[in-house]
Each structure stands twice: as structure tokens, then as C-alpha cells.
Length: 137
Image 1 (cartoon, one colour):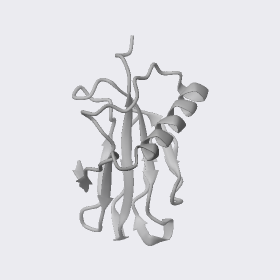
Image 2: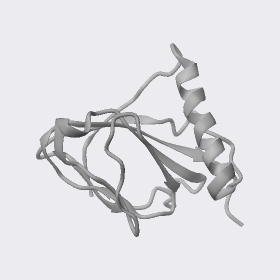
Image 3: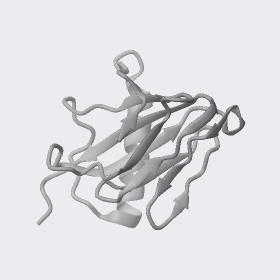
């Protein structure tokens, strides 16, 4: 169950921003996951996700569903100050809440189940996206 506002973002004015994110994702993948990756693809671009009280949560789900079989890694870049909202914890199953500090990035395999708990005060803004690759063998 999802109850958030999803906003598109155009990286064409500052492509180096997305390049830095992709560079970080590739480095983490090389160290920890070793997935075959294509990168971020145009038909499934990163999005800004805004969580507000009363419409600020995302129930348990994986990102590598049958509708997006090529998603290999999911990332969430925290854009809100940690103390600017209550609730809104990103939890990856088996790992608990993730780092809430602005600028922190959480990276995990897209088949991992995860959620964002309800925001009860303030607003949580995050950049969420996926690295794609060939189908798993």
C-alpha cells in the first residue's frame, strides 16, 4: 500500500548529479552486491517521493516485482533534515530503520522487502531510484 506524492525530476540541467549517484552505486555494487548492471534507465528514472502526515507511508514491498524485472539495486537519498519530520522511517526487512541524516543514501537489492513508516509530523523528501541490469540467472 502506497500513500505518497511522487514527483518527476529532470536531471538534464545537472547531469553530473545523477552521474555522482551512479558512480556511488557502482562502487557499492562492486564491493557488496556484484550484480550485472546497465545503470539507471530512461523509462524508469529516479523520482522524488514526498511523504506528509495522513499521506506519508509505503507498506512492505519489493521493487523487483513482475512489472520491473530488471531492477537490481534500489537507492534512497535522504533530502530532508532528520529532525524536520516524525515517523517516516525507511526500514529494510531484517535490518531495521536506516540512516535519516540528510544526504545519506541507503542502497539494497531491489528484491529486498522494505517500507516507509507513516509520517506523523512534518515532511520527508527522498530521491528514490533503481539500477537496472539483465535478468537474474
